[in-house]
Length: 70
Image (cartoon, rainbow, N blue to C red; front, side, top):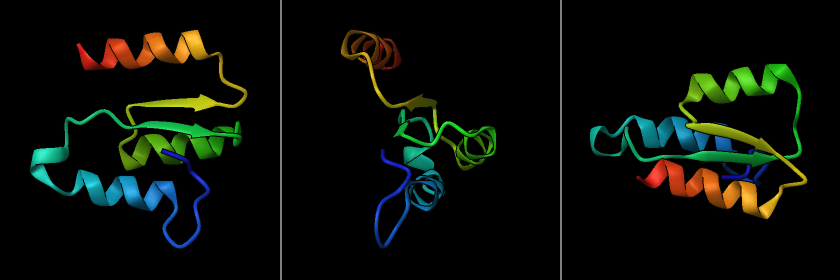
């Protein structure tokens, strides 16, 4: 999920998703250009499973996603 989206940002969207019992364990990965520690902390507080900053190594992200889905 992108952090900086118009209308509903990724932090708010993730927090709302996590409000639903049946969705609490669904992995949500933040994919963003925001590398600041305060943004990471906010993402963690909202319930992101992982936080990845751009640019992204495609093989690395592929392995991350496969690991989260096992």
